[in-house]
Image (cartoon, rainbow, N blue to C red; front, side, top):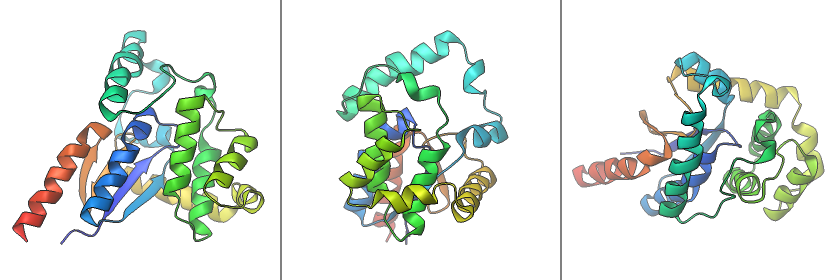
Length: 205
């Protein structure tokens, strides 16, 4: 019997954004909890042997953030800017740590993750800006001041490192990566395949 889905991702990831609602719908439809694990994406990709974003060709970027992004936005029926936000190259770690701070204070961080992803990819919001954090936290009913204060705490830093090391140990390639119990599915384009595996398990009883 399946126990749940673990979602490794970064709060600034375009393809995590495209797959987010589908991921949640799969969890809800099949009664599986979804656990969100923000990771240091660059560190995880380096450990997996992936090419750093800065070294990728212009053609690669145009394909994945242009043609492929437009296709998936249309297929998933998700509104987006249609381009990479100006603030996208800024560090994403504080946004990831904010999600962990919410989790450590006993909150479910999925709704907050979705708010951050939407603000970045639909509005071009800067994920280093505390005003963006305050707005996102307010929208999900969380108090901003104590959570933002926790972003640089030792407890949050330890958890962020632990999630990143966990992802590296599982050979995660990038964001998003999903684990159905111990089975890995890399990329939001594998969500339908993951759902098929869930249905297989269900039929097997």
